[in-house]
Length: 78
Image (cartoon, rainbow, N blue to C red; front, side):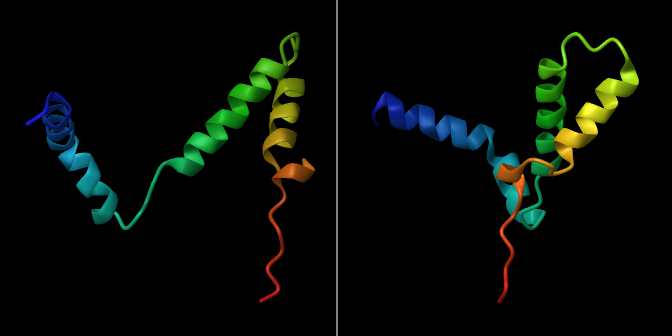
């Protein structure tokens, strides 16, 4: 057995519970939470210089609220 295959086997064995949890939870993920967190972090990076929390909060809500055209979902007319 090559060292690469042995390492792959150890990796799969160590991640066995996590891989099985994906199927047990019926494809549930924390993707939406990570997505919101990403928007907040991006806004925080963009909003440097805001000293007023209300202005920062407004900027954050606008950025996460779908006000940007590239974030709009296409309409399904099926």
